[in-house]
Length: 543
Image (cartoon, rainbow, N blue to C red; front, side, top):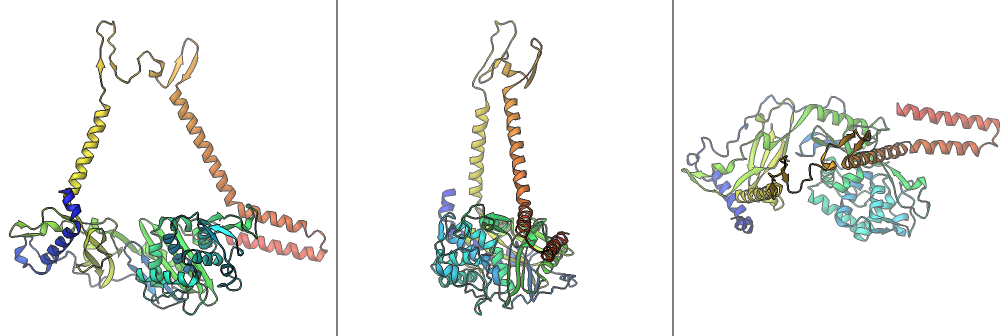
């Protein structure tokens, strides 16, 4: 039965979908064994008084959006479909395309003259690479996402597609696949171009897709990274070869730090203003915020929207709150005759609905959609349930086909494995010699009772007056000691990395003092005043 179902899986999906469609649209209500029509969904009557919350703080950026990454529900939007220049948040899409086209991140990228001298603007952020320099794809990705290096963006685009123009075609193709309708990309870096623009809604979809890639999350969550040396800085220990994350909400040293933020990208040009895309996870709910054309308010707006989202909304798994479709196969009966007896239907635990905390799941309306796209039919999906609250989309769930025969076979296989494990624990033989004075049963594989290794872990030898610790205990103590030492080393390295900036500043200060001994008294006074002002500004920012 299992082989038959696997072999004819597509046919069974089509048959189940046809039965589902027929049961809903063609068969009369009286033909079903249930007391209500299958299309009658619990909770279709919504509360007229239901109100969608609004953030208390005013959002100052020109464009902004806040969505739930699990349900795609839009919690807040402001000019979400208006095109703006994205600036360097473009590099999120660039990184995604590189990760999908490069199998080995240790492949070497050679910087061309065009990558390091053209497609750049004055004062554009770079790592200082020159034509002929080589870095791994991994190094370039860290420099791209952490340092926002535009020369690395150009080099990666050339490595993947041969040119910036060809890479832009890949960017626009991926954006179209993700459902972006108001975006067009020209450069991998995001530098100003009249034909390079996006919307808040589109880029929220791009970020929602990006954080599904574990490699992207790992790179983007890193705060400090040292890449291989380049011609301009040939020393491996040169501080210029170390890059730092620019997103202040991800670093504890900044007052903008926000607990739960695990991915994001900053951007800025004179034409684009401040742009920011951020992903944050708290209490099982992942939110994505996109800010476009901000004016030094990108962090305050993002924080205000995250506070609003986590305070006012809840993310509910559909499988745990709506059982209407989980047992939908039971409804396929006409006059008591089952139409389907080898298939069941289920909803994934990852499908969520996002609602205001003042609204219960019973107030949500739902609609069954059978007309699915080819992509939606993957993983045995045969229908989609769309959930709305007062006409506003709050999430969806896919009804998927499950074969009980497969589950039975898997359970049978698990039982066989467990039985084999139980048999392995049964001793092969048990012997007892009645001729001995003391009856000492022995089990195959056990040590004799007289053996010291069969005693307690710690033994006090009265004859010698010594405490004997058995070998297994000693091994455990040695392992614990090694773990403690490794942990101490890790904490020490972490402490040194956290204080790295401070050490560098002290060294630069000492170097400055050393090279300015020949200054006049007036020059020294200006120098000391400048240093004191810098120290005061740093202490103020830390507060």
